[in-house]
Image 1: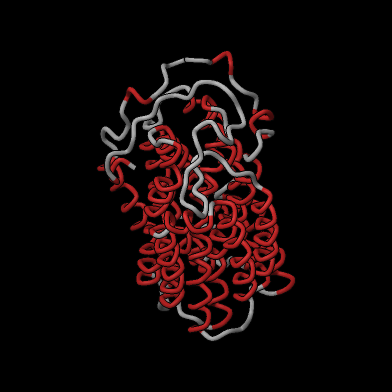
Image 2: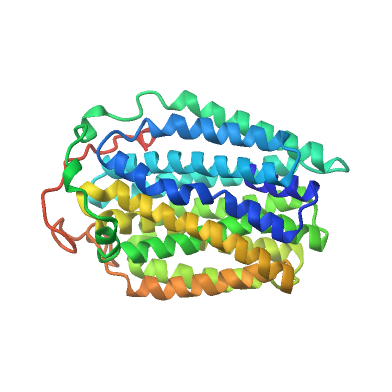
Length: 399
């Protein structure tokens, strides 16, 4: 809800396409420097404390963006929101990885990302319902304040979210930390990071720039909200059927095919198509983009050493944030020169490259191939050493 509301608020304050791109990029700037230290801390401690801290920053950033009176202030509070999102995501993803057996990770990360997709489904529709009319400044501010209040409700679900016995002993292995360079050289980690970067950049720019495209083509904010929600609904549908798709195609082929199709669909958004055709493109695109995030999480988790998994996930998030800084900035420059639809062509190229990376990425333990069989726990391991015991997730509410 907050991301499109930030774009409309910036437009109401006089931002052009370049300024919208810069504000969207600042959202990812602070997390670039904070991700790895937070991941290191989580590798040797509990995941849960990061979650309420993230909620505070997200809620406060939304509310303060709503009362900001300048583009500089909008950029600042956008950065605060981004830092809060980083804290929440590192804590929650590490929690899923720590409490899931290898063969459960694709499924559980898929369930986890359904929650994010539900927010992307409801949020744009709520923002579109609140924003509009002649007073764009006031309605966009209202949408951001409401988004902050909704984020604060998350506090009610954070009690006893982590079993203490699943966390490593405090201070364990502090002297044996694997260097970041060693993690990045682990086979499979760079591929997972790049695929995640490409898919998230596509989702992020789509959320930030579809309102700009709508303004250019005369599409009402309420319609743009519905279009973004259709994309999110398709992503949810994809993740609900992720396990059968994995059994049919396997992780590598599924990533390759969906990234390739997403590249073509992103480029199609740049065409001056009617609203119904744009809706069809976004539904198909949302389905294809739904694969990349959960499977890239599993790719990175299963490739990384056991005592560096949170750091590896943090490096994946750093790649995401690098994409969220560079891609909107590049999109703003391209939009200023070649028109507001040109960034979607850039996204098509990025996703095309990611499909090539996916086809060359190795299979990992727990991947289900066309026969539906799972690899044994010792196959495909890039490292040696004992594996920590995990507590299985007993119900969806544990995810």
